[in-house]
Amino acid sequence: MVMVMVMMMMKMIMMRIMMMMMMMMMMMMVMMVMMVMMVMMMMMMMMMMMMMMMMMMMMMMMMMMLIQIGSMSL
Image 1 (tube, rainbow, N blue to C red):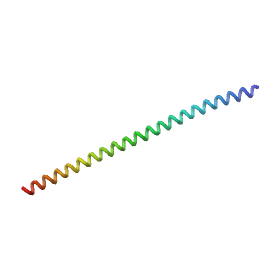
Image 2 (cartoon, rainbow, N blue to C red; image 1 turned 135 degrees about the horizontal axis):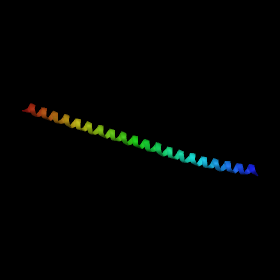
Image 3 (cartoon, one colour; image 1 turned 90 degrees about the vertical axis):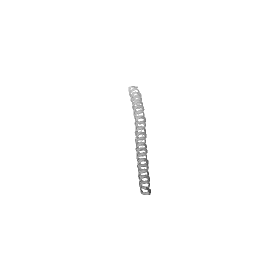
Image 4 (cartoon, rainbow, N blue to C red; image 1 turned 180 degrees about the vertical axis):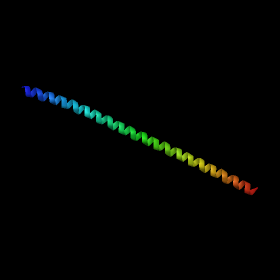
């Protein structure tokens, strides 16, 4: 009888530990996903910034070329 009680207790404890582990795993997965999303967002922002800078540089180059052509024609 005592053995059965002990077994039941062990089972309950094991179940609780398993539940805790599952919860921890879920939390870890969520955290990992969040981190990946954040990194992706950062990368996208960096790419956008680079693209904007490139566009600005191109515009500046075009303006310079136009000014040069204008001065040459004069």
